[in-house]
Length: 329
Image 1 (cartoon, rainbow, N blue to C red):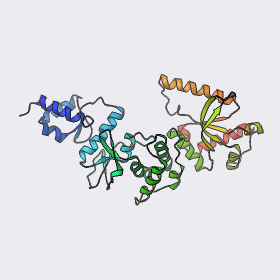
Image 2: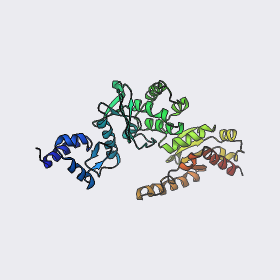
Image 3: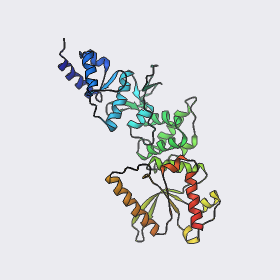
Image 4: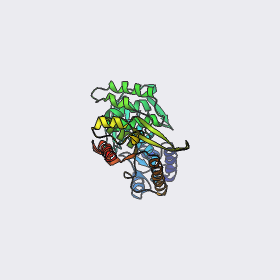
């Protein structure tokens, strides 16, 4: 009979190769009694992830904990790889909604669990990548799986992030779109794929851009460089808008001539979405306000958008209209 101490030592070695996750069957096969397993969980030394999997290092957090959840899924569904929303989060795509469940894919059917969604699909060699010892669907395949399941605005944020982070290229998006269109029953919005732009640095910027375009207002430039009077870099504005195009789209008066010679600048302001700032973020906020003062000192008008603005379909465009009306007054 294996001594429990020796069995636990072997289990920890096994868990170290599995993102600190072991299955119930692995625990019992190692010789650890059922009663000891229950005691470890009750004492908080181990944490139950899903029915049948346990985390032997309960202090894991952040991306490490996300990997543990993904690992629990592939351990429970042998022959599977992490996929869909879970794969997107693990590879660092921004804007992906957290579903609260683990998604995996394999060629054979598997029974779903409370926190586990198994998908059935035949994956080719190019559809799977090794993410530090954990098999996940490739960025291209992940986009094809995830984007059709999202609303257009969220889908655009995910596609922008894929390009911005370098996880996918323009050709990857073309291939992912073609793959997604083959999935029967998935609503595909071609405009979302066509609008993807790697210059968008955050999901909020993507959401603002979608709300603008959806109402017929088109930013003429993303990441617009603003230079000072001596040619120095003062800022990079998230968006720039043409006054004449705004006038035509929104039907409001134009501002005075001197103001129209400079574009209207737009900034995606994440402070209201993240109200509890630590010291580093507070410093960034102060710097951002100083930057805006420098930009307005050069004669530019700046309109700021928050996350809350993008929740309502018309709030972003209403802010632009208000800016035009204010400057024309």
